[in-house]
Amino acid sequence: MRIKKVINNNILCVIDRQGHESIVTGRGLGFGRKVGQFVDPASVEKVYRMEDKTGQRRLRELVEQIPLDHLQLTQELIAEIRTVISQPLNESLLITLADHISFAIRRKEQGIEFKNPLAGSILCYYPIEFQQGQRCLTLIRERCGVQLSPDEASFIALHIVNAELNTSMSEMYDITRLIDGVVEVVEYFYRGQGTFDRESLDFSRFVVHLRYFAQRLFQDKLMTDAPEEADSAFRQMIVRSCPRHYKCAQCVADYVRNTWRRELPQEELIYLTIHLKRVSGGLR
Image (cartoon, rainbow, N blue to C red; front, side):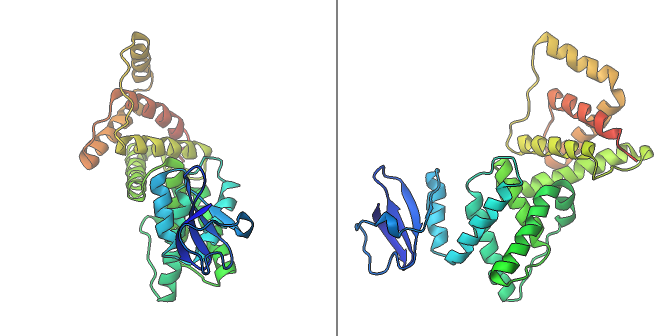
């Protein structure tokens, strides 16, 4: 490995024989070193590398701005998260979560704390990720002696979901707001039947559907109506057999049109109808 940049006494940016850039760390690894010199692999304690070149550049910029301890802590947190979250996580989680945690710790030291207005919704719609966020707060307190605000669990949860769905954080806020709006529309439509049991399997499945539906909506990847006769017959069968649930799906489409200025194709309405039929049975 040849040195591309000396970041500090313990961190180097290096290039391997294949031309791939990495960040390597080790005690005193960069002390007295110069660009172009080779690095003894035996002196390297950790290697950080992103497959994506843009991600690698962002990683290099990040290690220049945050303490190495925060990056190492985040790597530990992600390793624990991966033991619970079965969904593949985008490699950029290391960058976004390390940046967030380091900033949160610095804010705490300055007596500044942020509230998350979507904390309740995040707990409801992403319970597993929220639990991991709480676990991260415990580990941060144990490792750094810093007690972050409970709201930080919901921020961390959104970073995890973002890594699951390969979206941006701003898009994750929109996805959560859309899920909130759809659930409100659906509960109002079925108001005579009661409210959702938010801990039920049916509700969890419904939220998973809404997650991916919202992702398709905001990424302009909504399902298109298939022209095949068999598919058309299937759609007509669903409309005839589930008229009330289809009507509810149309109300959701009205909400999406009025709030988000997007039109839902028939294919999305049909799959939404199927999920509404299932979840409406869990109202209490």
